[in-house]
Amino acid sequence: MYTQLVEAPEGGIGEARSAEQAIFDDKIDRSITIEPSDWMPDAYRKTLLRQISQHAHSEIVGMLPEGNWISRAPSLERKLILMAKVQDEAGHGLYLYSAAETLGTPRDEMTEALLSGRAKYSSIFNYPTLTWADVGTIGWLVDGAAIINQIPLTRCSYGPYARALVRVCKEESFHQRQGFDIVSTLAHGSPEQHAMAQDALNRWWWPSVMMFGPPDSESQHNETSMRWKIKLFSNDDLRQKFVDQTVPQAEALGLTIPDPDLRYDESTGHYAFGTPDWQEFYDVVKGNGPCNRDRLRARREAYDDGAWVRDAALAHAEKRAARATSDAA
Ligand SMILES: [Fe+2]
Ligand SMILES: [Fe+2]
Image 1 (cartoon, helix red, strand yellow):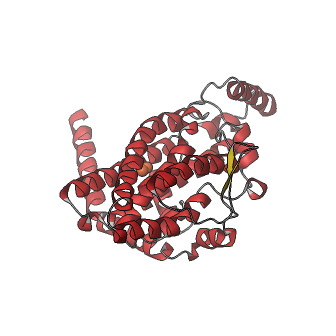
Image 2 (image 1 turned 30 degrees about the horizontal axis):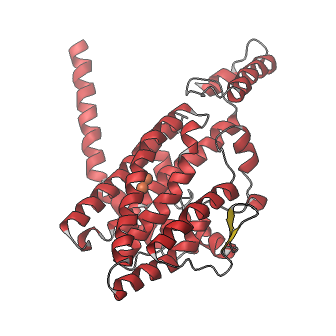
């Protein structure tokens, strides 16, 4: 619909486009949401599509590290909670694919981009979950980081994305609480359990700090995305918020954050912290993390295993369409 609008041959394309651009800019300035039927610049559509589809892929791939523990959760209650959480993540993926589809790209295309390895998803999900404490730590840190990242986005400029994130954030809060509860139980348990919680924190801390993306000085998308209100805070600002929020929680758990440079800076009112290993981050993003290949293999297998469902749904839809045609004739 949008392509037809800007390529309409009559009426002076340049003038029409700049009038539409002015309306778009005005809406952004006044924080009026952009809706799927509104005119929007190509680059805005493209950037949003990249952001929302990456977010959707992250929710779907993010089911794998924790799904790995459903059969081994230590009690029936923990198993039920974990299953509910993993199912929530599937739901988040579906809301977000739907939001992305309103920008004109079919879900099949996004799925294909993920399975072929072209599309990116959050680098954090390429790390393994070695113990039960990892499941708690993911909920505590990774879902905690997701909340910090996503709450501002409920006010982002694109309506379908902003609205999808309202419900996503409510569910992420439950995820964070269940993770903290697991870590708290272990941290206050036997010396072996405490050591297990500390070990998980040691392995997940830096990947969590890196979840907010590269430093502002190296991030290509920050400035434009902020002007368009697709992003409301910079990577470094969100990262600082995460550290400030999480350090007191670790202290309450009696756990030590593995950063010798971490200290409270009275002059700024924030925690100062060390520099993550950005080389590791870029390696994981490029596909060389500990589990990148496993994750894609698992998604491809799931896609292939689901072929019969897609075939059956298609056959059913074709049958209904044929019946409707013969009824109309
Ligand atoms: Fe989620
Ligand atoms: Fe979550």
